[in-house]
Length: 145
Image (cartoon, rainbow, N blue to C red; front, side, top):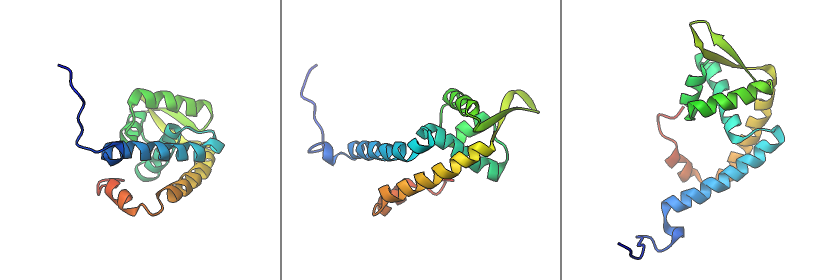
């Protein structure tokens, strides 16, 4: 059965999903720009920032706990954490209670990189989302950390 595609929208500029896609791409460009001076990808930054937050509030997380909190795939998280470890930004230590698990911590170098990157990312967020308070309120749920 072939037919003409039909949409309830007059065009892509009226589709909320398409508009969210465009906003997401623009925000990702802003994040890449903010993180470039720190030689971090966005995923690396998210994992570093989430690790910092977890360590300061809940103790040293495992890679699995980090992936769960960050909302990232566990295999991808493991690969990215290994890269961060190679750069000396993260330490992975065997969990004394489970030799298969790794407990994570930021190194001093990781804390230094995160300090600068976090300031730049928050400044980029402030600039990007200025005047978009309703959007931000709509995206933040009461359950968000």
